[in-house]
Each structure stands twice: as structure tokens, then as C-alpha cells.
Image 1 (cartoon, rainbow, N blue to C red):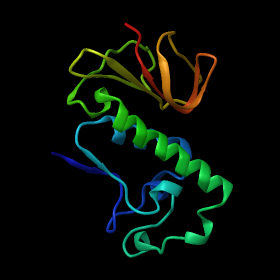
Image 2 (image 1 turned 180 degrees about the vertical axis):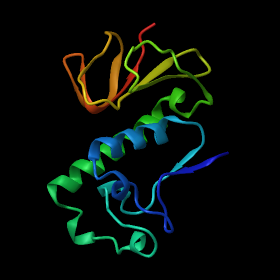
Image 3 (image 1 turned 90 degrees about the horizontal axis):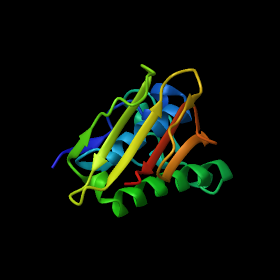
Length: 161
């Protein structure tokens, strides 16, 4: 089983690399929908920053956990964790890249479970709004409204069959 992580006790923290919550959540969406065991380093749940070692080992700011912005970040991560636990396709080894969108800055892949159910993952890595095709139940989103995915937006949805 692969042990997947985006930051750790001896790497620069994920948020420090991008300084963008949008890209931060795109990376987490990939982590929680790819094969293997996702691992979260303490502080990632609140997008804690930290440079190269030893700065990546900052103390956990326990007194800041109850701040509204940190509660929102924690809730988003909980949603991804729940999605991973409840959607077999997110844990599956099987996926493909359908290439349904013409934007060269769109990452799109379909995860498949053993029963043929599909979960679609879309990441808008462009600087333009992206129109998303209809269909599917939204399981997780960031920057998605009225069939439009904002720049830096993330959409994970169960595909209708």
C-alpha cells in the first residue's frame, strides 16, 4: 500500500509552497482520491505554514483552532476524509483521464469502483472561469457555482449513470 503525503516533519509545508487555499485544497482533493493511504501532518488541517526544516516543525497553535477561519478549514478537511471513507471509488486503484474539457489547464479524472460507479474529479488550474458539463451529485466543491468552476476551483462529484 502506498503511503501518500504532501508535507511532513522534514519537508516544507504544503501551504507554504503555494500560499493559496485554492491550490492547497486541489492538492488535498488529489491526495484523498488517489490509491494508497493518505497521511495528514499535524497542522495541515488548518493550512499551517512552515518553511524547510526546522521551520516545518512549528508548534501546533492550539489556541487558534477555534478561530472561525480554522473551523472552516477543519470542516473542509473532514469532508474530504468522510468522502474517502464513504465513496469506494475514492479508494479504488482504477481511474482514467476522459479528456472531456478543452482547457489545457484542467485536471480531470474519473475514479471507478468495483461496481462500476464513478466519481469525477475536476481541478481548474487556469485563470479563467470554466463551464462544467451537467450531471452528477456534488460531493465536495470549492469555487463551484451554477455550472461554473472558478480559477483554482475544485469539484468532486458522483457521476450519474
